[in-house]
Length: 325
Ligand SMILES: [Zn+2]
Image (cartoon, rainbow, N blue to C red; front, side, top):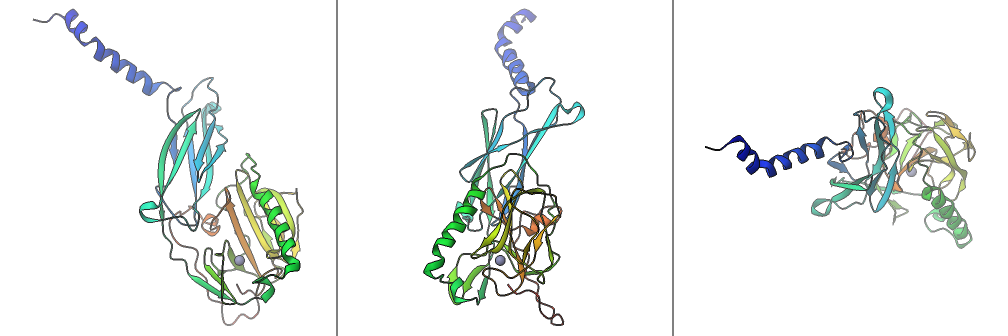
């Protein structure tokens, strides 16, 4: 017969392992925070990553957090939540490029770094059947003359500077405010052929609106740029923090200047027909960590990360004037 003492002696390595495992699973210092991201996202869509630890950990410091997406390491700012503010939560908006690979190659790695520890997952990219838009514009907007090349280069440089900046504080919140009520005249991502010459896909959504219609900011933020550019005409860039930047192009008038703080829904300008246009409309762009994404799915709640762009609405034949793509 085996005595209890000898049983304990023979089983002590197993007991030691069980105690160590229990400690490692319950110790707050070693716990991996809960993080959520969609498993599948369509090309050209944005999605939210949330990280949180709502358990109270007395005296524990907020963790250092970052996600790695599309080759960029992006910091997250955790904020205290819960009873006594002892838990924390953080979120970030990321984007899938409209030309991201799909199928077997369409699994994009997403990493979370929490206090130096890394956990990984993948996001499967779903294809979107982008359609083609054939448009006619003034020839100088398809093959710009030599004298405007330096102006175009200057516009790109100034825009690039805005896109390269990263404001850590989050000012955006979902859903976004729809900037004008007008319907979609050209959807995000369509392959564009100007005067029979193929050009870059449409990195925005065109919304109908007569010249002078007020344009509202998608979310709170700071005006990063408000100027006249060759292709965009009068354009406003609003930086919403954490790499989220909205663009409002072809305006007839500005209601803000660079450096202004704007609130969600605040009027930032008026619809117009300046720059490369065929008629009065708002071109709405959204850049998330430098990736152009469809802004329209973010103007509704809940956010849907799978699907194609908001389809074009045919013009009402009774209504004359207004917007063209
Ligand atoms: Zn447009």
